Image (cartoon, rainbow, N blue to C red):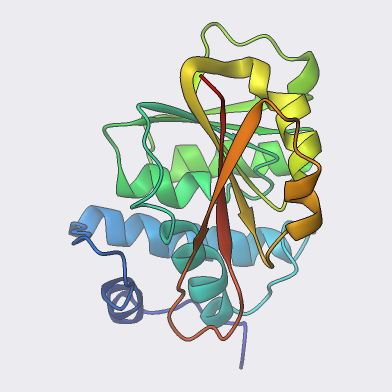
Length: 216
């Protein structure tokens, strides 16, 4: 029955190979197993907690995993903050794809941060740190060279709440489901934005990545 089983390892490999990244994404068997385990965890926890509105395993692959990985060619970092991470998206798929880079997942919802912490343990993600806090009141030990969000807030609020956590050369990345024309017009004048249209296999929907950086 739909939503009762996870996707197969072969389906995950086929989905990732179909991503049009302009670069070759090579994952090993451990990474594919981590993605499959992550989907299983989402399915199990979703029965009790409202982590995500997507309930079927076959929908989680394109809408969560492939959607998250579609930004890989455009984000550059050694330590990234995923703010308003929710169920760990896009941070956990990105951390799986790049185990040599550090990812911090932040959310204000205790149930969601508990899920993310459990996922970090079960997936054995040594490069991921989970924080339960409000981003505007949080004081990290060091700034980030990238901060990403997926449907976290308006672009104006995203900049206002998170930009002080960026390094001087850092970049903000906002994933959006439609072109945010009004939000772009409301950005503070000292910031410039670049838009990238993303392509997700098997999804006939608009997806954009907005890159935001302060003027030099």
